[in-house]
Length: 112
Image 1: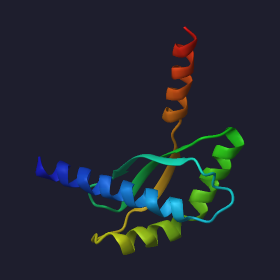
Image 2 (image 1 turned 30 degrees about the vertical axis):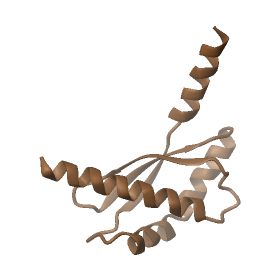
Image 3 (image 1 turned 45 degrees about the horizontal axis):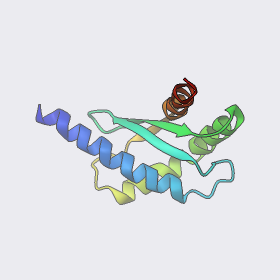
C-alpha cells in the first residue's frame, strides 16, 4: 500500500512543478489559461501522462498542445532539475476539457 501513496505523492509533486514550468514557457502558441488537471506517473518513473486543460476554441487548444509537445524535452529537463528523482519521466500531454465542460454545465444550470 505504501507504494501507491509514494507514486501519488510523486505525481502531485510533478503536477505542481509542471504547472510552474508551463507558466514560465515563452511560446506564443500557448495561451494564458493553461491548467494541469492531473498527472499520472508510472511506477518505474519513466513515463508520465499529463492532462492539460486549455481554455479557448479548438484551434487554441490544438496550438497549445503542439507547443507543449515541442517543448517536451525542455519541460522534462526542467522537471529533472527541480525534483530529485531517480528517473525523470517522459511526458505525454493529453488535452482535458473537464474544466470547460464544467463551466458549460454551470452556464446551463444558471439558465434553469
